Image (cartoon, rainbow, N blue to C red; front, side, top):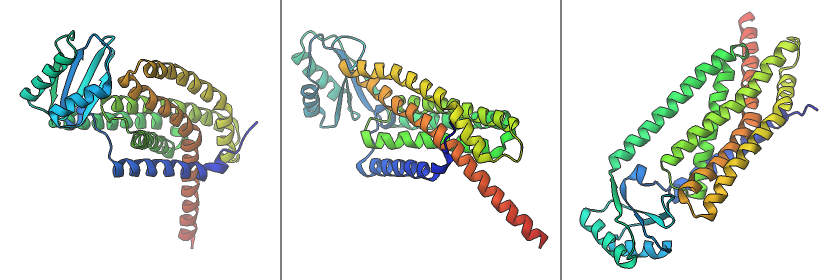
Length: 305
């Protein structure tokens, strides 16, 4: 049964814009959380060899450093901890280590890592360059493979990827996960996943355009193509989400903060990528095609006059 997905295209656009704008605005007003990878700082990692309370360690370190403190459980051991603060000097980090040793007498010798703010800028620039290169390669690939659909198909596919990236930025604004290297990995993973779904839909549109007459309504062709790929797209997405959800539950049960920061946005991103491939990409392509067709007709009429 063919459903009229394009009928609701403006509702889809409105939903996306509301979430993206509200999420990013909220994030900017309340402040995005940047991890040490981007803003610089000091990280102390240690195996405490006994149970610990995050709040207790946070208070202990904060009293010494007078900075904000992030305490996370790591995967390197049963009672391993990662303590991140704003940049502190060697003497202050030595005092923190000494205080930890007094409290946790069996702990191993910790490691200390200092990251300069300049490193964060380099990492951010590298992430932006990687994102731009990925988008350019995808743009060329889509244009070559789907040239029968027109250049607008490639453009709308890239706009859809930007939509997915902005959606995740908005989600980070809501949930306040720290923006770090995991954030970059999530964005690139979601873009790769989303373009795969979009290509499946576009591929079916191309096939259906060959099967029907040129006089057939483009809207019907797109709606038919989306309906034909819907079950496959949903089943693939649910399988992927189920696998990532298992990772998230494991991280939640074992208080693995790093895994939580990666898996939860990835789950949301996969769902967003599926939504954008079905509801945004083809709808946007059809809207632009109709807009161009209407204006080209007007131009041709004006020239005749």
